[in-house]
Image 1 (cartoon, rainbow, N blue to C red):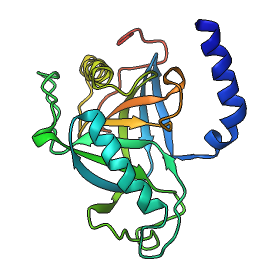
Image 2: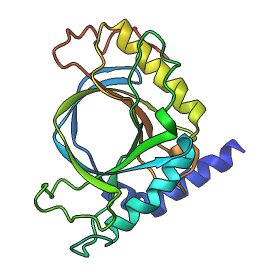
Image 3: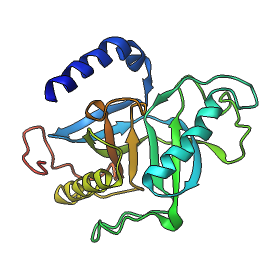
Length: 220
């Protein structure tokens, strides 16, 4: 089975590689890297966000259709907006509790799911949604701790890597400064072993960083 997966992966990259590479990503600079962990500085960017109910996996599916309709022309300008990455998701009202990281359950079964908008837009030029449940927001520049992983989009995998990142933040004497974000970079038809998934947590940019490329802290 392993060789079949490898052959399929090569075919996906050959056939779909150009389209995958053409997708714009939210810009950031890697400040520190430690194994699968990174500290990143993100520039200001705009998101289109909607709130939906359900568990982690159901919420993403529900929201995707609404947001995709918006970028496909369901907006005041009837303008198509280029697809970008990642698609991000966070619990509506969730607060990070470093002393009890397993208590991350979503508030009232509600999730905020968002698409990152192309960098060519400003808040004045971005097409306004027809759907009143979609909100446009400008996210200010910020520092974020990240852990990257491949595999399925299950809640179990999300929670495993969320806990690893929270522990790494605590071990390195960093301070969380925002809600936990789940980021997905690939379309649903991408084989699970080729997917890029991340858990992101904003951190205080004034913290003294004790991580380095040679550090062994936080190994997975």
